[in-house]
Amino acid sequence: MTSKELKKYVKRYKNYDFKDKKRGEKIILVLRRHWLTFVFKFFPVTSAMILLIVAHFVLSDYIANWFLSGSKEFVFFGETLIGMLLWLIFFVLWIDYYFDAWIVTNKRIVDINQMGLFRRNVSELDHIKIQDITTEVHGIFPTLLDYGFVYVQTAGSKSRFIFEQVPHPMLVRQLIAKLQKDAIRKEEKEIFTEKKTL
Amino acid sequence: MILNLALILYLFLLLLFVVGNIIVVYHLLTFRLNQVLGVFMVGLLLVGSIILFSFNLFYFSRVDWFVLSEMIVM
Image (tube, rainbow over all chains, first blue to last red; front, side, top):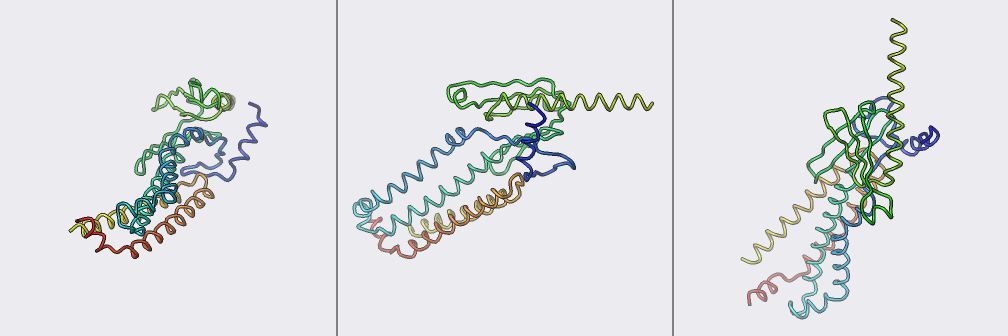
């Protein structure tokens, strides 16, 4: 990971913002779970929506004639009601997926964990406190599509930061390692100049 | 009796839908990570919800509820 590549990342997330962003802090990477996990999560709702649409065209006449003596309006009413609930569930699931994010800035890592609609955990870790970074790619799909876990061992209050099912875990590890080295170098430089002035 | 119960259930579902929409919109607008996408999703949610809700109300007004309830009781 070179400085040039780092700058490219910073440029990509220039318009991104988050709560408690510090002055002079630049977002380098915003990570979410891989899109395949999103597909798995949405599969039941999406298939229910497709089934509803198919049923509307194929089965609504049959249901209306067989059970309701031709009251098609009631069938359509039921379909739209189910559609409304599925539409809402889709967005609730999307929030659950999209709001789970890991933000790597030039100063720290922020872990946002959204659980349902009413629970959100946010923890942060300065690069200087990172002790060890491990990646894990496990399974057929993760190996083929290059996504997996990144474990960041820390010296902070939260002993382990876990980036779950993120794309390109090796690259993420390299990037965090570089940021950690930069932070250590910076601190050593500051200590050195302090000693010099004393 | 059945009609009353059905109406209460329907009103409860509508309330759930409206409250759910408000909560989702609140979440999307307060999560500032990518506001463009947030606003787009709010638009998508509201447009979809309004279309579905209008269809639902339209068919609700078209159903002959009394005939239907008698049919179900029989």
